[in-house]
Image (cartoon, rainbow over all chains, first blue to last red; front, side, top):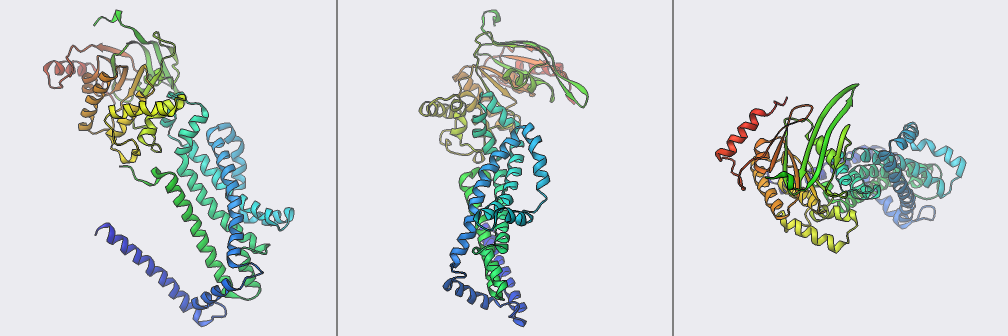
Length: 259
Length: 251
């Protein structure tokens, strides 16, 4: 079997498995559609959602509200997280001083911060962005730190023989060598951030995809709940795809196999 | 060869290096003294894993000797190029970016360093691969990039640490001839570390034979063989056997 036909076969299998999932949904929902709307009812609710805004915000507006919170928090997490991660991976003293803090905060799920953050900062935009930041910062820091600490010592020797200073060593060796680890951290961080934003919006918000679900639950609009869930899944998956494409474009060497 | 008249580029005096591991002292190098002359091709031959690379790292300034001194009598500002054991070519840089790295770090302007790098890429036979990434190259080609990169800073001394150890036999022979061709085109002082007797004998103006752990200078051979050397020439084979008989067994 050549590469092309095996690719086709894999595609066909993916389509079949999705169809199976939808059939299962169809079978399960047909007995109590008021509890579990059928795919068709969900689709109709989705079309309605496009035509009629919920809480005066269009469907794109809700997606954008959630995305905006995630993207802002993610950018802060990337910049601060990579910097701190490099410092911790490079300097053993900084690592010894800071790592225990991270290790003790890490087991606390970001969602557990929600009550405290709302108590302190209310229900505006800032507390939500802060919550997403809390959820996305830690994976970036820890992955970057590990990546930097594991740079092949031989690569560092190359830069020492050329008498590179620390900044040059960072730019030419340490950063590119730890890019795969940094991207792994960014992917973990983005999916964690997306989870947190939905949770935060479910508890206190007037917009966003998490709010859609809560609204559906409050008004016994089960199809709206399902629409919200599916949207969350699709947008979350697309975010991951964007990062993967970005990695491929920025660092073509990481995705290719050694000859 | 009259060594007294030649310029000494590097003088090692009583170099010793010990490591401390698990409350034990491990001697890697002990009392090595060698003078290395300008433009000579010196091969350092030693069995097994012991001492050779450590010695080279000490010369390069990557490690400090426990005892002894490293001197550069020719100039206090001696630059060095290093070709590493495995291919330490950076996978995130193209061939061109790898080769020009040393000059970039020194702050040479782009036009000048590109010209120099282009010349060396062509010298090592990689014309047409300037924009290729290392994953697109074979092992031998990667090591050619490593050699060009080390040459690019115009080093006074070129250090090579078993550069062809990871290559298959055929590519290895080819690369040995290549490295001689490059050395003859761009004369440098070369210190080439290997555990392969044939390789040391094929390449070296002088061959420093080290003992097993800790590494000491056991003997220095000066092969009176015309270049290009032929590894089935009776004189070559005789000297090879002599060195072989004198080499410590590696564990």
